[in-house]
Length: 162
Image 1 (cartoon, helix red, strand yellow):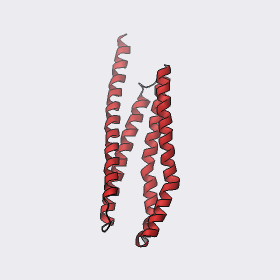
Image 2 (tube, rainbow, N blue to C red):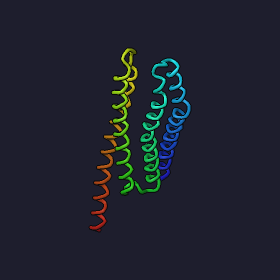
Image 3 (cartoon, rainbow, N blue to C red):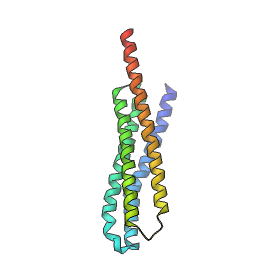
């Protein structure tokens, strides 16, 4: 019991650290990057606020997935990992990862369409890496969701037998 609590406590701390860094990026980094880009490229300065809105919308599923992961760790601490709520949490994480992939693909398409003269390989590379990471998370969450459903079904069948 203590070992499980220590492991989930560590994972919760890591999640809070990730959330803090992402929130700091949203609050401090993104507006600065948008303003700097508007100064460097005055011809596309009108895209500063649509970029910020799109970036904040992009981060919504990320924060939702972090919250669901934190809740799953809380369920594990309480010994309620094999519950329908945990299955729904994994489903939400999977859909959040798929949403992030869709946003990245749309953003990459817009980047390719809008930026013709500059070298955008770094933007494409970052998009591919985020897409790969989100794909792994979506597949893993889907797999865990299926396994958890099967385990809950088997547990309920065993409860009926006994």
